[in-house]
Length: 266
Length: 273
Image 1 (cartoon, each protein chain N blue to C red):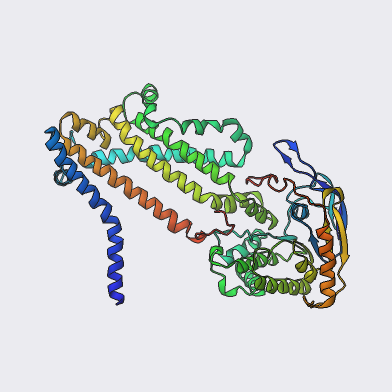
Image 2 (spheres, rainbow over the protein chains, first blue to last red; image 1 turned 120 degrees about the vertical axis):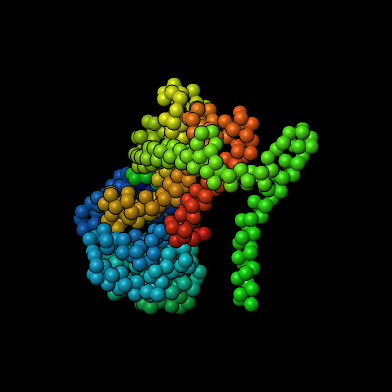
């Protein structure tokens, strides 16, 4: 359904081309699959997700969805950002309604869709609050609701819970699984946390250094709901951690010079 | 108990406003005495100034006009100059924030203007408009323009890329992006630019009226009363200038804080605003 065809990507800093963040990467994601992208920081996970979202095109290669090349961001591919990125000048309900309004929804239909989305993440009681009045976990719930309201076929999540405490993170992971199972959508989930990837994913991809971007691919054959302390789970965890630890360090100046981080429109 | 706390809070709130004023008056009074003793010159005291203010408020003429006429003329010029600056500044700021080419082409202009002190425009204003109110309006407009333009531009350029991406991801077309994301996101910067422009304009106005010979206005009144040795009237005008500037500033500040930024809280959603 989603296919990355020989993707390479590099950023330019003041006109000078930087070393590639991703190079010659190819893989596919099946319809309805839950895929986790794992890797050390600076390995291009977020870049990969941004390419898939369509925020900018790859320097080389093609990203295809249903055989069609991605033209730009679309509501069909909903993104949950690392830090919720809700509009702080709108209430939670208005944030959720934003995308629906853009789609031309109005009146009772709009209100209904908003409350349905808020209900799904358990935020009905906080509909009229502003994002600054919410906790980190609630903000991520709101961000998820905002995306769910648009009924995306593909859900892209960029380390959505990495800033949260363990309790709310595990709780939200369960909710993401529930939503995924109810909606049968495809999820591409970026994380740096081995345990999170193992708990969630059908399949885990480990990204390494650009010389070989795709460093390891594993199908996680564990029945759900998964037990984080079971033997097989821990075996998996050991294996993936071993692999991550032996990856060559890829500390290089990336992401700081991503196009347009200083605002404006590309 | 609750009643008592209410009183205490009201007193504290009032005190915060009154205390600085009281300090200023005490300092002023002491200074007047010292000047009188050391230099033998009569320095208007707060009380004398208050009496003059009362007389002026009662309709006493100052330099051919009532104080209301002076005040009205000053406010009119301020409004005209500021409106001009606001329209141009907003237009420039939005355009250059959205179109990098514009910024590259003429971005230096407001930054240069920012460096020119208001009064340095006097010769230019005189040459362009001659002696009269137009010169004053020009000076206000040209000085208030730069801070507005620069702030609006910064506001637009500094909009969090993730807000833009979030909107695009939800399918927002360009005009929605401009009107419903970039504009509200940049609003705090825009308002603070307008506020600085308002203050700058007011200061230049008074200074310009002193120099450009407008024939009326608070600045003109201050400088002319000095020539006629009517120092208390000068001081009264000074007090009026402070009062009006402060009132507008408070009004604007209140607007910013209560209307628009209330929702953002102290810790912004993104962690960096």
